[in-house]
Image (cartoon, rainbow, N blue to C red; front, side, top):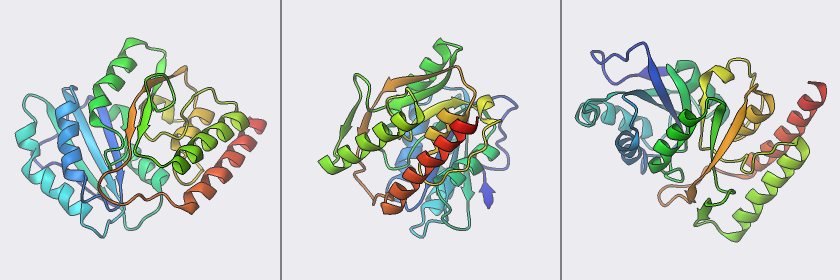
Length: 256
């Protein structure tokens, strides 16, 4: 695993308010615009963006390097923005990508989002303001399944699959959160320290909700936009991993 930062003469201060972690694989059609939009929509004065790339063959990592070298000084204004690229040798799954990002992160809070614009950067201020309004909010979740939330561009089969997965996990694990399969959430980094993640696939939030010692997980509505550019990385293996993860987490709850 290699790490490339904004540049050698731009150092991030001791206190970093936010780390945005974006796992990527073949997102060359989205990543440059996404980084630009995140920088425009994030009001924090001192934050970092970590792109964790699984050695994408389409040149995603190269585009991040170009963004780091050309764009960050122009968009920083009076804010301290650091963009870092973490390149992994091969595709090892989203949870390991997130854990690598968290290990490298310096922020007090961690925002996780996808790279395909299904998670709009416009919502970042809402996440941050919600976290700040109540000290008991340890997790803020971008939810498609609360009042005001929605999904745009999915076929009916994908809707049914998502709803079924949420119902299955909530019922088996007695989790109160409405949208436990979203990949768009903000968490205080301190609550991650005692969580040992063991599942595969896209179950990071679900495992966090089951294993972490937190006060309140607050859901806020988001409009989920199905990707317009690029190809989805979801396949049948992800579905199998989800089912096996729920079974594993149910065993964890029984012995806890």
